[in-house]
Amino acid sequence: MGNIMHKSNERPDVLVHVAANVRRLRQAAALSQQALAERAGVSRRMLVNIEKGDVNVSLGTLDRLAEALGVLFYALVQPPDSGDSSRIDEIAWVGKSPDSRARLLASKPARQEVELWSWSLAPGESYASAADNAGWHEMLVVIEGTLTLVLGEREIVIEAGDFHVRPSDRPYRYRNDGPALLRFIRNVVY
Image 1: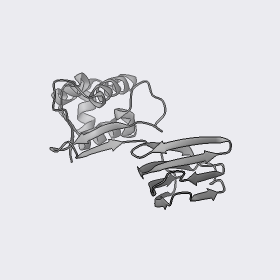
Image 2: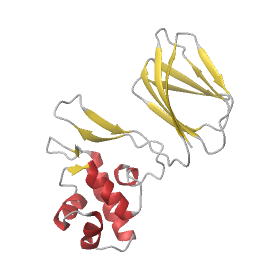
Image 3: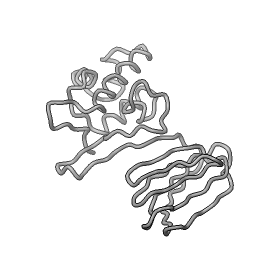
């Protein structure tokens, strides 16, 4: 597993978020650093450095800490003042090349089913859909082009490289108003 890494003297936001979230969640659970370290299978020294934001943290270590704290992974990496996991948008891993990275965009708990879709719409094309069942959410990531998401009278424009998460329990339309092919990923969770 990779690490949340930083290569400059400045700490990336995600390390600051992890530090604040681990400390806050540990204190809320009334756990000492030693107790949490033992539950998560990490050294107390590692936990101290994580809570300071001074260490490259493996994704595996974060998974173990989340499990020991009884929270989902995203609760450790999202901004501490954010109560909504629909837009986390934090880099969780970088490789040796600046082009290699993993960004946690959003997270939603799933009860039963997850669908992963690859969509493409030609210029001028649209797709209209009835509402999904209550409790369903969709996560859209635009790969190429611009997606116009129509929700009743509201239009949300999602550019290539951006994403949107929403409950999908009302009618919607996907539209390509641009001059080029639109490609996007749709993840549906229940």
